[in-house]
Length: 507
Image 1 (cartoon, rainbow, N blue to C red):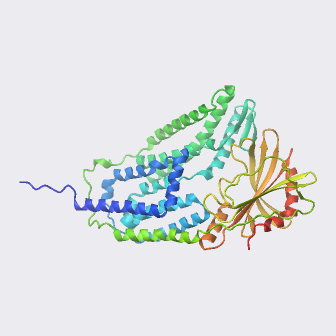
Image 2 (image 1 turned 180 degrees about the horizontal axis):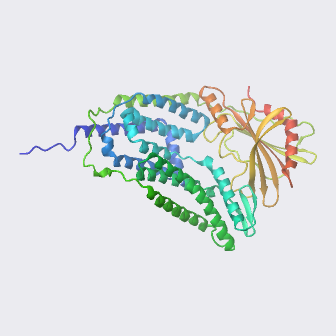
Image 3 (image 1 turned 45 degrees about the horizontal axis):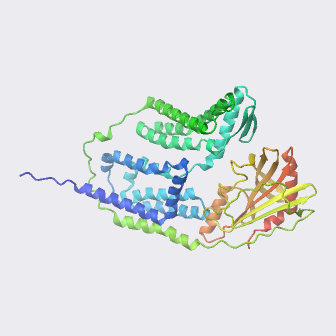
């Protein structure tokens, strides 16, 4: 009688237990940082731009399974040094929560998951599975900060190309007019969806197709650059098709269909060209059986417990900082030097700010000059209630009446008070025009640097300090040149600036 070999060898059992412990550790970390984990899923659910987040983890797991024979031969052992990486990631998570920077929270969470692999299985396995592990970072919904630069580039490209073929174009900001009709480059035209999809596919293609690092990097850069340029050609083609068809084609649903068809063609061409430099390596599946690493350790239960306990420190500290926002009643400064409050606005425009703890809107007049004052006070920075928020806008991208036709950052000094302002020119299709200035006030000073303000307020909150801040917007109408409104706004700040600065400075 022949003996029957056991179906599962000891080293395989140890691997399965260790991987099961890793999955449980990931789940525990996600539970401890639950709002962050759920926020990623929520964004995947509601945004087509970031819906790819659902497939990133399955792709990473498939890549690991594909290389299972090679990875099984890697020596694994717990490594407490990984906790030295987890600690700053937890500080990043806590600081990002304090400042309301959701994307940084999400990167910190994914970073802790990767560090958990290091802690439980060691640095050698992290190096061996580096691409699948760091591919997980693509789960984080990121890229909104690129929208405005991409919109500007697309508008520049399209207007230049249309002029090159001999058509006259009048442009203001991202809005431009041809004899056949009016156009605007909005967020959906920025190409951000193409770029994210191209990068997600391009990184995977480069990893599977090449072995040389420089080729992988080169193709990944191409996956970023090519869709930006392709989007410029897409926008130009849509404008020209609509123009030469008397505005009958490339509008409505056609507009989006042409875009995705064009993107598909560009991606196929990019992959086809990439095959020219293809580097075939050994076929992973050709290995008949894995060669287990000698002395595979038992499941690192103690390290998993230590990692979970360390991670728990951040939400525990977070609870000590979660205090109600201070109640503040805003009172406008007394009018000075001939300015008087008036209940009659000069038009219907108001800036779009969200989540403020207190708000004030006033209208002022002096002779023929008119000024709108808008104040938004944030007593405590928290998600969707932040002074610095991408949803705080002078005007929504597709507003029914108003359009932002150009903005810039300026540094001014008025009556001895320094200001760093965002200046925006707004208009309606009926000829109404506004010049608006916006700045923030934090820690008793006027400022506009969004990143520095975010970091400063977050650090203050983490260490138990105050993190209140205020957004100010003043605006004046003009007819022909914005210099008319600039003179009015300068006069208003010279007369009222000191009072505005003091109205929300808490003791």
